[in-house]
Amino acid sequence: MAQNDSINSKHIVYAEGAGIGGYGSLNYENVFFSKGLFKLSARIGVGTYRVLDFQNRFNPDVIIPVALYGLFGKTHFAEFGFGQAISSTVHVNIENLQPDRRVNIHANFSVGYRYQRKTGGLFLRLSYSPLIEYYKTFRHWGGLSVGYVFKAKKK
Amino acid sequence: MNRVFCRKGAKALRNTKKGLCETLCLYVLVVLSLTSCQKENFDIVNLNNNNITALGHSGMGVGRVYPPDTYESILNCLATGADGSEMNVQMTKDCVLVAFHDELLGTNTNFEGLINSYTHAELENVYYDTYPYMRFSIMTLDNLFSKLKNQEDYFFTFDCKLFAVGDRQLFLENYANTLIALIEKHNMQNRMTIESNETAFLLLIQQKQPDYKLFFYPSTFAEGLEVVQQYHFAGITIDWEKISREETETAHSLGIYIATWNTHTKQDNINAVHKNPDFIQSDKIEHLVRLLE
Image (cartoon, each protein chain N blue to C red):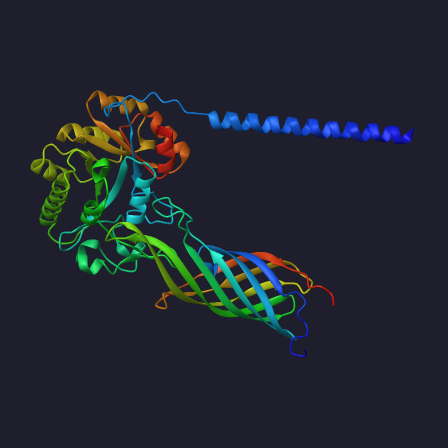
């Protein structure tokens, strides 16, 4: 396939501190398109703030960041991206003081640098990733990711 | 012959490994049992029937996901088994008491200015925005005490933050009346203390309700002792590092209660307990509860 001929290492797993997962997240990213110096990738992750709610019962806050990235480079990449985060967080319902789960969607953008070798191995990423929380409120934000790029099998 | 030596060697190696494993397991067990059995012994002598009341500092304290003084923080604190919580109390323009620490809303919410410059209805649009994707609203004291189950089982300290603009005397008068009305409505007279660093405000409350337990909040123990003795307040609220065990004993010998705060770590809790106060407002409330069990 001419348009997709040089994807050597397409699976990436990484942990991100801060970033679009909120305070931190574990992520899987798939490089699904590659041509010359340009690549496209998609990411999904999961993050949390608390696993127990304010009543100390198992009732975790869950943040699911998803994003699409365009990458330009060979080993050192410039990265641009956008995506959404779904948050499902537990708060107090002030009518009865009981746990109340609220689900919301937020937008995010990203521009940054990443280190990602063709042959796999260490993955590093530093990004400025502002959030548009509840599609209303802008927040300056950023993240630092460390992970592993899986080496592609030789055909 | 060589095969026999090899077999013997392998067996000896297996035995050595087995022995090493057993020794290691034993060592781990001993260390675990020693550390789990370490229990602090306290000889608590105070004015509070020789018990220390364990209070959360604005709920779960600072540095948590739940911002201090929010519903989540206070309710989480009570769920840990604490005796109750301290909370910072401010009054809105239309005389509603809410919990909020800072002078200005802008430090950790989406609004600017003083609590006292907004009505309660306006504050319904305020939220803490410390962390992404998490919004927490401002807590109204009357709503908390009206809906809290087993409210009568808990103890609360009201740290009165008297930030306001305009006529000071009128503000203090309104604040005092509103606070007293709240306490009387929820029948909390014997399950609360009121603390402030403003003597005039405490005197105003004292004038209206002589039986309330009022705590002065000084910068030094000497200052606290002087003011409390002069005005016959119930106690002193002070940073645990600014008071010694001997000073606590001095206060107790004069019938003055001591409440400490600023215990951010487990060791701070232990050190504070050794000083024999009557109340501890802790940022590590889960640990303090376990410590005093």
